[in-house]
Image 1 (cartoon, helix red, strand yellow):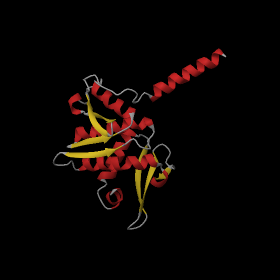
Image 2 (tube, rainbow, N blue to C red):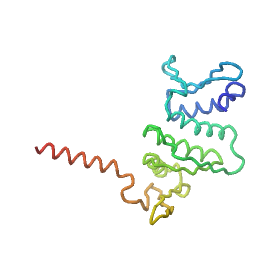
Image 3 (cartoon, rainbow, N blue to C red):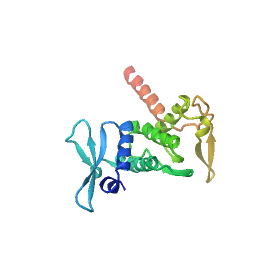
Image 4 (tube, rainbow, N blue to C red):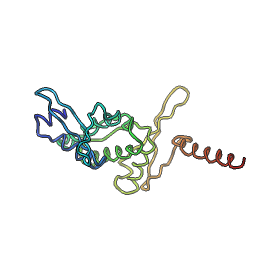
Length: 199
């Protein structure tokens, strides 16, 4: 789709992808290079160093994971759906550096504000969730426009429990031990350092 848009189309999709990329991953842009009538390459090019070009195959799994999201957002921006649409996204943070998780949350939030698209996202990213809560606290998204569910497993079955969010981004429920791994590791490190210094 990107190749056809860039080589034979009006470049709406590739240009919008690069607009989104400049907001969320500055310093890089996608370029399509036509090899012949039927073949092309898709490269990620550095804006600051013109000689740095990385073929998408060599750019890492995270970039390849992010590209379909960027492409769909660009297509929705070029021609917004005429009726409400639900797009299901599974682990959009997969293979991305944790610093990019919040960027993906913002990408989808903006998409929901600018188009008739709503997103159902499955995530295991604490950073993704924290960015959503922050945007609620900043007033960029109303608490009633965000639904968070935690899937709890008990006695061989699973149940989705809704987690309420107030206008400050506070949650009314969170299961014990979930997203506490960093804190527990930091605490264990501090205890080990303290024991080591006592020797």
